[in-house]
Amino acid sequence: MTMAQRTALITGITGQDGSYLTELLLGEGYAVHGVVRRTSNLQRSRIEHLRRDEKIYGKRLFLHYGDLSDGTTLRRIFRAVQPTEVYHLAGQSHVGLSFEIPESTCDEAGMATLRLLEIARDQPQPLRFYHASSSEIFGNAIELPQTENTPMLPASPYGCAKAFATQLVRVYRQSYGLFVCNGILYNHESPRRGENFVTRKIARAAARISRGLDTDLTLGNLESRRDWGRAQDYVRAMWLMLQQETPDDYVVATGETHSVREFVEAAFAVVDLPWKKYVRHDPSFDRPAEPAQLVGCADKIRKRLGWEVTGTFLQLVREMVEAELEQLGR
Ligand code: G4F
Image (tube, rainbow, N blue to C red):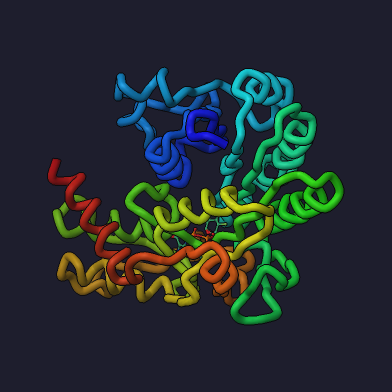
């Protein structure tokens, strides 16, 4: 395949991962097409800098209105774009919220993937398909760390929907020989993370409290542990999966866990404040169930695709808090 023929279609292009992936693909010479909902507020989106760039927007970056629930429109977009690579990242991705809006979460994270797989199956030209699976499929995991072969045991509606979609990807690969991959990604963060995820919430609060703009920070379970990596590394893993000879599933993780409390301590240390003075517990942020302990083994992607993490946990925390401070300074 020559560079000029490479055309990517991204669902969820305005999200954290979608925006970093778009930058990576543009850098690799792709034409990039994104599906956006009519309600997406592009003005504040993470790809606004690219949309304003006259050398890029309308030339190598294109946006199409569509919705994950609207198969007709998605089919039309596939026909018009004829993508060689599809990155399916869109959908409600907040685990806590999935307990409150389970049906729409399952429609978006589960059924929409099936809809896209069916469209991919019907394409006349060969394409490669990436599905954003999640560590949440392991939920009450029966082993530590988890690998591609760990049984799925989700503990949330979101995890159930992702497990359904992950298994469908495997079925479509085995049954129809499609080039479809699951990236089983553990938590990945950046200054572009949504404000209602815990890392961004903490980084933002630490910066605002240090500037006297907020007085406290309310959180749920401080003892919860996660395997937190850098989003920029994780979108590179997505791209690598689609550059291989054969499709497969890969766990993408750091192999290290830290508690929410450790993230708080590190974030407040960046602004030199005693966190205990400002952080309160609010049970409304506790979840009906938490995954037992999610930590991933990324040996397969490291050995086979040469993928690596860049930076440490403390560097990630610092990067996020400093980005918030810079934004406040502007
Ligand atoms: O930041 P979180 O909301 O991320 P969570 O639930 O682990 O899910 C994220 O990572 C998954 C794996 O990659 C993705 F599939 C998913 O789409 C999403 O990107 O919560 C992290 C932890 C949880 O244990 C939560 O209970 O932080 C705990 N927490 C404590 N206080 C809080 C809060 N989480 C949020 N969002 N807000 C709090 O105030």
